[in-house]
Image (tube, rainbow, N blue to C red):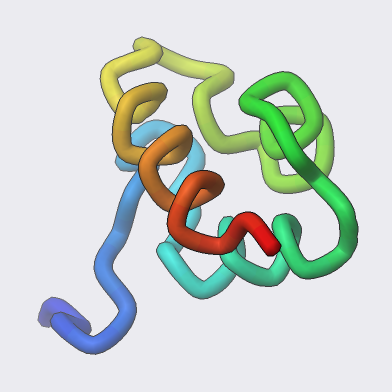
Length: 60
C-alpha cells in the first residue's frame, strides 16, 4: 500500500516527505542535519537530491 499524499523519500530508512518537512521546520537546513534528525540518506544515498529539494521548498 502506498500513501501518495505523503510519499516515501528515503527507501532505505523508510522516511516520508512529512518527516523531512518536519525536520526542516525544527531547524534542519542541510542534508547532514536532516540525516542526523531522520536517518534519511544514511543508506544508498539515492534520495539526497529529493531531500535537498524538499529543504529548498521548506526554506523560509
